[in-house]
Image (cartoon, rainbow, N blue to C red):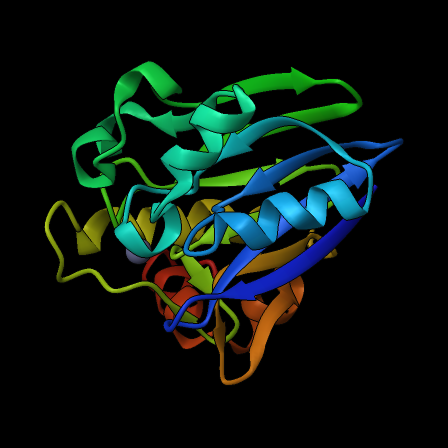
Length: 202
Ligand SMILES: [Zn+2]
């Protein structure tokens, strides 16, 4: 399984292209659908599904045109439907923890509300796509519509329990980095450490 990061748009968003054996899923495709479609064609990849970490515009912008054109579903936690503005006919909406299989990909959805009510982390093998829940050295904002600081704290605690070598891929570059590990964040991320300290886990 290969993971490629594609930086698109004016907000340092990270779209992820995950592929294996000529098949692919896209995580948080936004801003430039022509580029993404061209990338899939150039690499001769068949797109099986689109997965969204949450419904904020900078993670979904123009994605509906890709869903419409290629005819695959976008997978979105139902609590973020309104935020996303995507026509539900192009979506597979779900609630809570899930496992999906697309070709060679087993996808585990971990609900991580806090940044938005429907925010999730998306796990494939040892890789965790954290959207705006967890960044290298930071976490997402909790002062936006449907944000909840208490839920963010719980979500960070949940992520801290994952295997320490889990590779994380965030929804934005943060200080030039979009990737880290759970183990590193447990040691160095002040937000995750505060959550652990409050639970006397540190
Ligand atoms: Zn966001």
